[in-house]
Length: 196
Image 1: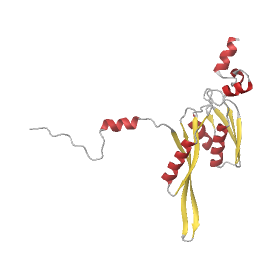
Image 2: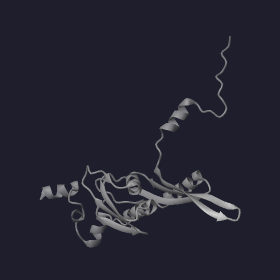
Image 3: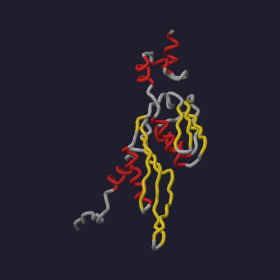
């Protein structure tokens, strides 16, 4: 009696290959913050569309925010993710926080971000929290003034992160040592002060 070869079902992959693909970590942290339904009134009735607000980050200091619009939700999300990846910016991070306080205004929302000591956590609302966590910031204080519209707060937080300056570049521009540009709790600054 001869053994029959194992048959594979068409379209199915062997278990090992499937398991390996599932184990792969995604390259970016993609978060859908908000999905809105929009309506356009036409002669024959209303035509509905969707707007998706998405944040994409690598949790290592790069983050992007974008809006995607389409007639279907998945298409709107896909467009937003593609745009956010193209608009990613590098955020200077020192010990899981930002190097200095920054404040920006977007539409009717004003967003203020302040550096925090290690162990504080992310103190922020929904839109701002997603942007900060996707950027890889773990300790920060934030405050929103004015409008609490999630789109304005999210874009305002992104613009605030874009406005941050790197301490090394700023020290070079001002002609000062880097230690003067660092937050007072920074381990690098503590090491320098203990040597003195």
